[in-house]
Image (cartoon, rainbow, N blue to C red):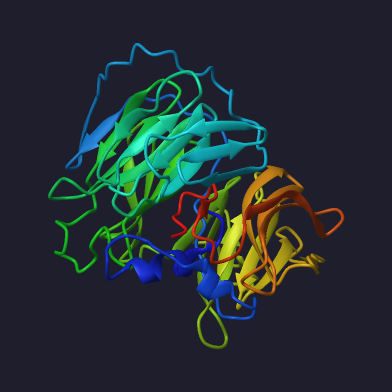
Length: 374
């Protein structure tokens, strides 16, 4: 989740049913209104083999591929990572996809990639890219450890899919809580798409037709925890912390943070969309192109400066107190850089210069947040 830029990544895609954002037009001089979505990645491993279909739980026996998969944790390290065209840059190593990369996330067993047609691939460096699934027309991906999630929109009733990338097997497939596409006015490819919001500690949070659902990947238990919630209601889940939309005193929403949606006194933070550190200790938020950083326990805002840039877009936390971010300068013609930022120093430095020649460069880039940048 995600990795912010929530609505900006999806609202232009509503009419076409396929996210396609021109960031150059949005960030321009760095002072325009930007919204963000974040879909979380990289926490602990889950190793269940359960499938759910139409509300009935069954054991799914799937055949593991003969190809050699990466050992658990082979991709656990977070490095400066981005993609351009068909190529993922992971530190000094590159991995090539068979198709142009529309979105991608990092698991501990390889990169999960969505192509323009909604086909989902895995790249792990040991084998040719393997097809893991199809039908992810919104290209919204989530991951935790070796487990990744997406929505298959091919069936009449869209299905959530949880997949163990390391073991190359499907863990859960369920349509529970979803309507036939269009029945509820919430099509899986629309402006409010069905998606796996996050996977945290073996629990998947599903933005379904009937509201927010919580799925235990190991047992297959699937429960409705917020009936009627919009698919954008839950913004993040990481380190046991949940972040959800909270009505602001003025127009729009701020963010509530707690370990339970029913908490009587959740922390309230100014911002539109969140980006949580691995343990949930630190929270980055955005609001009208302003990035804020908070200590969740105390609620205190921490200093964060990036003077050379008009806007930064966080991508991944490399540790509990450091993260990568895309840096956009004040004018569209200037290069886009990948930055490394520190909580302790409250500042950012260039990790990889010029991942794009400009905000409007024909050669677009993607970052590992599971949401397309068009």
